[in-house]
Amino acid sequence: MDRQVRLIGAPMDLGADRRGVDMGPSAIRYAGLADQLESAAIECVDYGDVTVPRPEELEPVADESVDGRAKYLAETEVVCERIASAVDSTASAGEFPLVLGGDHSIAIGTVAGTTADDIGIVWFDAHGDCNTPETTPSGNVHGMPLAAILGFGSFADTDWAHASNVDPENVALVGLRSLDEGERRRIQESPVTAYTMSDIDDRGVTDVVESALTVAGDGTDGLHVSLDMDWLDPNEAPGVGTPVRGGVSYREAHVAMEYVANCDTELCSMEVVEANPILDTHNQTAELACELTASAMGKRIL
Ligand SMILES: NC(=[NH2+])NCCC[C@H](N)C(=O)O
Ligand SMILES: [Mn+2]
Ligand SMILES: [Mn+2]
Image 1 (cartoon, rainbow, N blue to C red):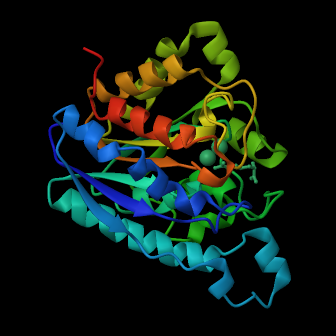
Image 2 (cartoon, rainbow, N blue to C red):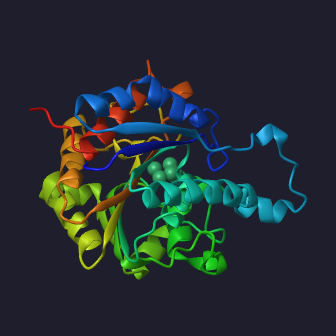
């Protein structure tokens, strides 16, 4: 990374069922992200956290049916606008925005803040995150951010979420192994490219990640990388709210991030999400989040 990295904390937990993921940014900082970047000669400055309302402070939503379909969507919009503005001013200052989650709903804000005309996205996740308020089984917005960014279902008219600079043709999901029925159909019907864990089993992680980077980088002028810690196997990353067996290994995750760092298309933003210290073992998941982002920023073994 040739630009200074600006850390933006997004202590967001309104999109997930489990409390504690709001402590992700502190846990990742505590694990030593700034030091790791600096030891790899990557300059780093900490912007602090964007403000997120706590669920206890919020008025219960009167219309239960709306609330049930996408919980805290109005509050998510407010938080995502704050994240977008932090990302936008970071990019405008010539720095690189690295957003620390928080649950995955924050990705809507990161992408909304990107300044490139055409961006591609690589989404490393066990889940598709392509539910809409119409298909969600849980009502949790962290299961919907990619659908929101791509304007699926009723997200088509939400201009705070639906990103005009992202063509679904330039979006690749990597590592899928848990899909709800509605999002499975949505992914099959859309031009998004999805690589499941079976593809990684068959082809190996480097081949899959190379293809994903080509999908996202071809004809675009910026690359956004979204790293959900539940992409990894729960043995490596136990501190996540929605763990799914059969994820990538420690080394597979590192090599994937090294490929991200070497990609020809310029990286324009990244977020690392879903690390939840309450569910973790000795901060193992946040430490891994920190190591993997350092690899994506260009840290090397030798
Ligand atoms: N970012 C995540 N961890 N998402 C998990 C989503 C789980 C499930 N598919 C749902 O929509 O509720
Ligand atoms: Mn996930
Ligand atoms: Mn996710």
